[in-house]
Length: 362
Image (cartoon, rainbow, N blue to C red):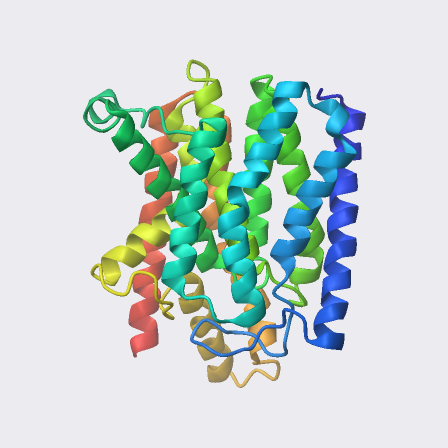
């Protein structure tokens, strides 16, 4: 079902439930210290002690909406929805325990995300069927074991990439809304109302957290949210092509996730394969933040503080990570043009990154 009024209803219900849960979790954070950010570490770039429970609001909303609108799913689709949520639980709970206790190591969380990716293959059959280049497909996707391994690494890698984006007001959640919106549009265009409804529910769930995350940073997705959002986005990308292999390009669905994908790959390269799961302070969004701080310091700006500068970072980067998403929507059936979108993003990213690195080094 994809009636316009009904779409507004499920999206609106998801948004309201998520917003109310976010508000409740913010109150709990301030009153009983539940899930508050400890503000220790190189990636902490805000003041105050915001809630890290946005992921809990997000996943509970997905669950509640599934129950509330269960009648929109036929039997097989309802089973798909439940298994889809079940698969994310190892990654989610690994992140949630870290958000609450701050005692779950990076490697453990990454392995739990790998487990979730492994589960989604065996529960709903989410697997990468093509890279859009036949020569590469013939080398890497001929054997089931290799296909499972590649799918697991790809989904876990995307989830790890989205985890890198959380911590600055609005970046992860605005990116997630764009992606769920893009996949929702493509699902509707292809007549896949199961994936369409999942995208609309997810979009509303993210938006409900976003209104408290930007601009004032009262709540963040946390590890539970960033891993869950990345996992769901990667799974949707895989399933969208797997369900419509003759109507959409695998390159196009993958290009939507250019930002977290390249963030992970570039981080691996600049760290030279060492300390891959250990946080550092050299991601692009962090360099933009340092640059804003430096510029305001140079002109003696009166509002030069972490919170004011934090919320400006997303404004600098929004167009950059929107570009490949827009390209993929327009050319969803053309892998060549979608790939151009990715390369334009990659060149722009590197140009900005090294330019900022040089300026900050002076």
